[in-house]
Image 1 (spheres, rainbow, N blue to C red):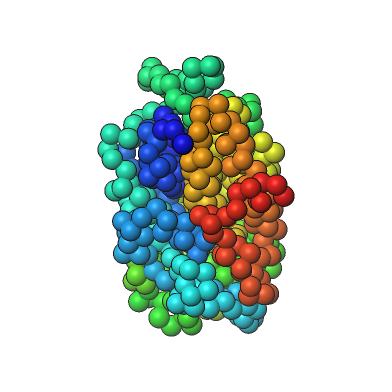
Image 2: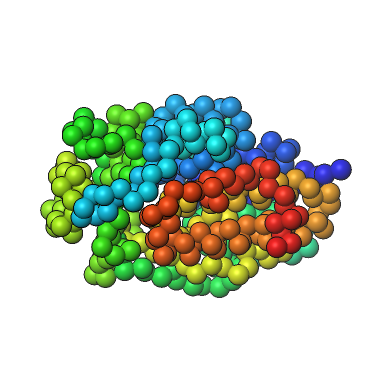
Length: 385
């Protein structure tokens, strides 16, 4: 017989909300602490690949319907060479992906995913404007202290508080993420401006002359808009931000030798946001006692495999499944170790693969990534490998 746990989740991002919804469905008491004052429409447009959508579908019809109501369904995943425009790989998506993997690919703004999830979490579970200051554990449980003076005691704490995780620092000490020397540019353009670009309804990646250089496009808002994401090497820019403006002329200058169809994408941009990209090495340990990490708090990665959100969502599902089997408070630490053991190999492989930026460049089989089912995963078999 399982017990009801008093669980805190630090961070109300996609991974934290996934865990919260799954844990509440099991009867646990969940409190989510978020440093922001409210949910805000910030962040990037993201690619929810079939593994991520299938995991979200398991959270219930409200979430599944919510992400489909605002998401777009790319027709294909296409790779093209940066200067010749030649196609190097093509993977059917849309209905084909849904038939193969049990869920479609959806491209959507992060805020729309959060909105669909937040609607299923009661307001009394949320604590906004709570910036974690310190964390400690004893026989009574896990003590959280916040900068506003508030304190709380919980049976379990999940740190879903991002690449600059305070929970991670409390467990394993301060450590700064590494600047990769790569910057990203983001823009959203009405699709009507791009009708002359071939297959604009697909997810298309233009592979550059080096692993740091690329242009990615995919549809948004049921295809009415197109998201444009570009990266390039630039050691002189270190600012990590969702909202810092960039210069569209600088953007175009980095890709002036790209194929005309790729340059046409950038010519359509009126404005652009710019951010430096950071990462960490795979973390050898995620859990300590009754505290564990998920998402970017333990495996931040470059966006080149489009799996950052997907890995956080999978983490939330698997963590909840492991905690569902806790029969007494003394089982919590083992359950969290089991969760980490089930996830570390996959997330580390995708971290390293994202850094290398070769995945799907010349071949079209994504089964190892897209075919993963967080709800059906054999936790004992995975943890034993």
